[in-house]
Amino acid sequence: MNRGFVVLGAILIQLALGAIYAWSVFTPGLKDAGWASSDTQWVFAIGLASFAVFMVVAGRKLKTWGPKKLAMIGGIVLGLGYALAGIFGGTDFWALVLLIGLVGGAGIGLAYVVPIAVGMQWFPDKKGMITGLAVAGFGFGAMGWVKLAGSWGNLIANMGLGTTFIIYGIAFAVMVIIGGMWMVFPPKGWLPEGYTPPVASTDSTKPVVGANFTVSEMLKSYQFYLIFLTFVFSAGAGLMSIGLMKLYPMQALMDAGMSEAAASGVAGTAMAVFFSLANGLGRIIWGTLSDKLGRKNSIIIMTATQGILVILFTYMAGNEILLYLGATLIGFNFGGNFALFPTITADTFGAKNVGQNYPFIFLAYGVGGIVGPMLGGMLGDLQNFSLAFTISGVAVLLGTVLTILVKPAKK
Picture 1 (cartoon, rainbow, N blue to C red):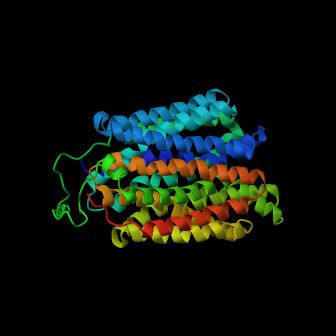
Picture 2 (spheres, one colour):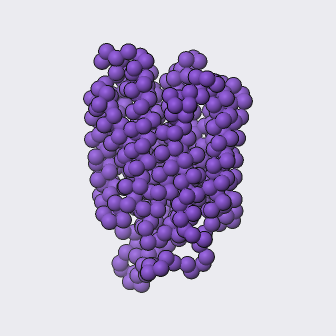
Picture 3 (cartoon, rainbow, N blue to C red):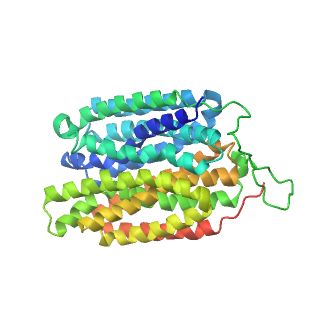
């Protein structure tokens, strides 16, 4: 099989899975239906946690079910979650928590690891680039789903939340099933022309190069916990920003004298265009750069700049131009997480078992997905968005220090 089809299938799958990042487009309608800011963040947080937990399940089933079947099951579960939420009316709190949060998140988790694991097997010579491309659709997808529901397609305004959820559920299932058709591992022993894989060291006194760690071996290493915590802080800050990228700038712009309608349009553009587009590009660019700079150096640069930007965002949200700039840069660095953490997992613990190992690293995303959005929601209800961004920014800078401490893992 031409390995270009793997890239195509991966992007198609991830475009659908990226729907979770479009959640903010539904929050104004839910607030109009009587939801509090913290209520809207519960659905988002449960979805992220379910996503991370079921990704571990997917890693365990990857070899027994096969990547094609696993991806298709994930697409069906995701689609059913959204469609059933729409059938139940689209505004019931517990229906959305369970169907979009828990069930939809489970579908994303089941399918998400497949393009990463398959892509690294087909592109061992360009792990950073292929991982960035494979997950780029996850970032780009949010832009399309937000605009389709909002200003471009006006689905929410014309059809309501319930019907929009149904339409999205059908679309998600179809896209993942089609993309899953190309999710197959290469033949045993296959290598790209001209590529020589690294050879594991036989010197027990030196770090092993090219070794493949099992899950249990990885969990016994201190490197796992440093990488895990860095991901928690970096993902939590980015996910909190996503959850508040509509509400906080709207408030800040209105406080600066902008009308509610204009503020809503500017804030929606910041999230749907600038953040989402940069999120997708960041995955590709950071992944490609890491093939040259190294994963550790790339994560240090990314987290250091992200921590500073998240803190400074409190001074940027109330100005249209600075809001667009802040959303772009934060989105760009946030996207880098999903290209850099799979590849540092493969580099540190071996590419062969990345499908089983990375889901445990990715649990950090679930932890960050609970802590970050809930912090933002609770402080948002207290009208103290700036404190939420400051706390998150400092945590990301702590992650920079933790990454500096990461050394090559010994078998």
